Image (cartoon, rainbow, N blue to C red):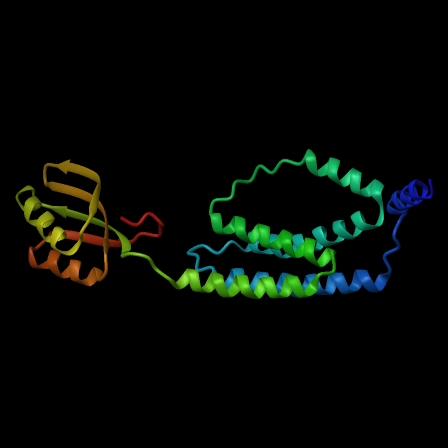
Length: 222
């Protein structure tokens, strides 16, 4: 009987409000501020983007503040916990994430808010450092040859000669577009080369009328 009463008392204690003083709140917010600035700088400096999205970077820097304070509220009151779960269940985000790496930054931002809200500061700092190192290493490691897009205009009689030269430099290539005109032929070719200058030299030797070699920013390596 005493065991049952003790168990019921423990269950009742879990529903009591826990007082969170100002010191805890300030320490959590200061730690969140430090790590948010850190993530902001990592996204700005490590992410090599042609078009830097400042709005997204501000979003992932501000998001941890809301997450951390929500976690603090969840620890203080069971009613707030149930209300928050219900509110989050009906939220739908319509903005599509264009880059998978952006999803990683969103999860990183949420992670910082949750861990700092639980006051596990060492875990948040060490994880962020390890993730940054790993991100830099993977970002600078290239697998296979670099992808390029070759756009050229040539005479019909030079077509076989051009593709023979491309085969000597590129192991694999893919013709993406053919455009036939009265003055010649336009090709868009996706290929992977180690040294694009070698390909340009070969095309000059066979006197291609005009061509462009474009760095293809994609993970689809041939």
